[in-house]
Amino acid sequence: MDWGYEGSTRRRTCMLMVTHACNLNCSYCYESYKKNAYMSLDLAKEIILREVQFVKESDQFDELEIDFMGGEPFMNFPLIKAIVEWLETGVIDVPWICFATTNGTLLTDEIKSWLREHKDNITLGASYDGTGQMQLTNRGTDKHNIDLAFFHELWPHQALHMTISKETLPTLAEGVLDIQTHGYNVEAALAEGIDWTINDALIYREQLNILKNAYLKNSALTPFNRLTRFINVYDLPATEKVQKKWCGTGKYMVTYDIDGKRYGCQMFTPIVLGKDKALLSDAVEWDSPESTADDYCKSCVLRNFCPTCPGFNYKYRGHLAVRDKSWCPMVLAEAITACEFQVELIATIDKLDEKDAQHGLAALQAYKALQHLDIMKSQSPYTI
Ligand code: SF4
Ligand code: SF4
Image 1 (cartoon, helix red, strand yellow):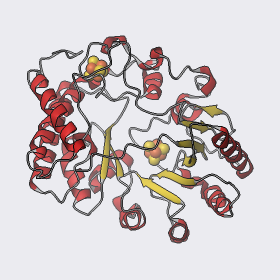
Image 2 (spheres, helix red, strand yellow):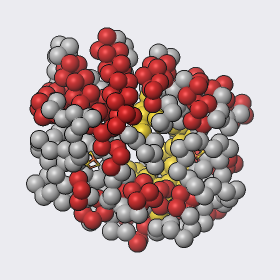
Image 3 (cartoon, rainbow, N blue to C red):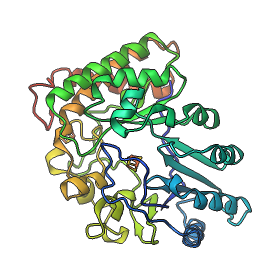
Image 4 (cartoon, protein in one colour):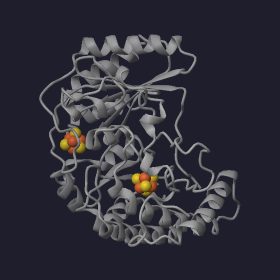
């Protein structure tokens, strides 16, 4: 069973905000300060050369990933094209790869043909929100404006990224299965900055259950990420203060804005926070427990399962560590269903490998503890 890619910690990720412009206006977009502004090619090259030097001098990194970000990065396709072709001339001497996250709606025939030629050096991750109606509801764009088959042809292992909004939650299972039956993988996340309710959590549980049953019935479908995460409610760090850090913000990754200023990640840049609140990378102690540990959560058994993003915490609650408590019932619904799925799935595997066994055992232990919690009545922080 494939439990998901865990990433290489030897890879430095350098994000370039190549534009602050976007052609869409998604309902959940957290980039509140979009505008027509672009990074120059000379600045992008200068940053990459500096990052290459950093990787070469570092004991920690061997390779460089250059992520083109926006806004919608393809609003600045000339820069993407020029950088990839420049790198292909062999101008840098560390292993490199380029990546761009895109809404996929700006790929003309000319851009597609260029991507086909350079697909080994640049990978695209497309966002797509489910059925045609879900895409229209969240993103205001028709499903025909994105050529999913093209993405699948060039990067077959790359999952489509789906954002779940309050409006599309009731059709989550239909949306995920619609995409998966066409052969694409899906990774989904709940939208941030939403006031999730107990009722939403009950709907979420119902939708996850439909997906759980579909995956158990049809092994040809790859279970989506919300049901396969490792669930450990016992073996948590001894120090209550320490909570799992979820990403490489400020450590494995760095973001350069269109003017070359450095941030821990895109979430701290002016396009997200406005220029007065934007937080430069050097202004934050990324490793300190204060940056990652929420006092409210220190006794919660789901504290290492519950996703937390310092960037969203800072944008919506003004502190890097403070999580959104409207997520608690949603996280509980997800944890219980994921436990049930993993336990039932393990029972169907003939030959377990070590990772299967670890997942199965942790899920079984977690299930014994979590089944006593009630999505409607139990109050967070959840204890057992
Ligand atoms: S495509 Fe991305 S940047 Fe553009 S509006 Fe949607 S979420 Fe925001
Ligand atoms: S479920 Fe709620 S209390 Fe538990 S870790 Fe997440 S936000 Fe904190």
